Image (cartoon, rainbow over the protein chains, first blue to last red):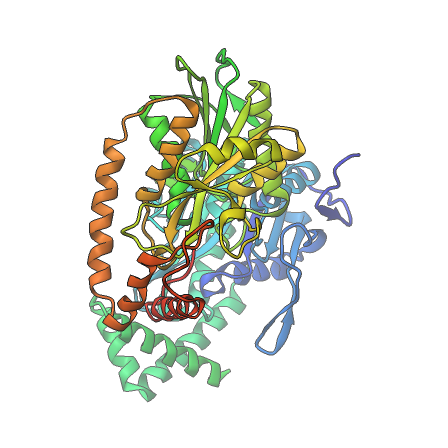
Length: 277
Length: 304
């Protein structure tokens, strides 16, 4: 009996030697989903396949978020003109090795993928007015060299701290390396009080990199508008809520807040942004 | 997915002793102590990626250098009396929030371990774990033994300081062994391989603490070394057990006196048959267990 594939390809995309961009639905500052939605919208991404959920998610019921029933989604999109494959998914609950291999199987066999980019947000104890940095970890020294003309932090040293586990992006980067696919993990530090909201500035930082690296010719009009709107809202929050302004001022002066103050700032900002929506 | 053997040692009817983490890591400490004391040599491993999420990533100068997975390794040691194979799993392939493996992955990894046992013609497999019991921490833990076929019962009865499930009051020979330390026994039975699980007792009020309990491992080691006819130096384990006993005493002193009074009664609990009439009543036992439960809920500790 042959083993069934855990994925379904609806239509074979007409692309070769493509680049693959991967983002996860649950990401700090909505970085992955924000970047991926922008790319698929801008580049006319067409859904061509999916990974079936039953092997990777507990399907004992559904989760409700902001009043709406959720269901795991793991979709592939192709952008023919740009030779780009995009994968957006809910992070799998188990069988991670099989799931991540399935992504690379589809990308390699149906789209001739030669390079991988993963997107991930990380929590930073910084103010939202701080310019966003873009960090990159790579699957090899050669890939690292190929990134030197971009404005990236490329010399990160890191070891998983005790009690924590590596991210799915690191797992995927490792797998790509084993398959000789050039891999880059992109990370943007997200101000901690925007982790559960959207961080449009961070999203733009990643989009700018892709625009330059892959020659995408992206129109940044919509994201610039989103950044402006969010900046205005946060400025209003600072005017209306002096406590919030005080916390952010201290962060801007590189001062640390206590755990309790961090939590209060996050709560106030999240509530304010929600009310303003 | 599979087993990778780096070498094929010539072993004569070896015994395999296997363990994965569990409550207070009692079984794991047993196997690791034997492995270290006998200077056993690593000779193979189970490839981890199908079973485990990685535990550590190392990035140097922006380049991913290594991704480490929990290990599942085989070791061997030839001794005059008995050749031995040890298997130590650093984690159970649990997949979700539980520490214990279950379902397909558990079955697969149990079979891979037994593939090695069969390849080397192991005459028997031992697993080891914890038995949560209403005992006091000052008592010497006994060993609960569960064989996977009836023919082994007579032999098991001869082990010192060891009891069978049928000798435990109220159990009528029944019970559960959670996770791979138990499952391996069942899969071995299915494949016609003799196996016995030896579990060291841990006081019920210590099971949720994030502490090892080497005192119970010591009891298991005594049983195993005698039945295998081997001698090992366990002085290091003894010192560790003494240190831990001191730590437990320190915690014990801080327990409110009304609860301590109840816990003290555990020194007189005889829950194994045959026994003298128990000096405390069933009602006493029930109250002790309720108080212990309340105490540890209050301390916000979970059960492993």
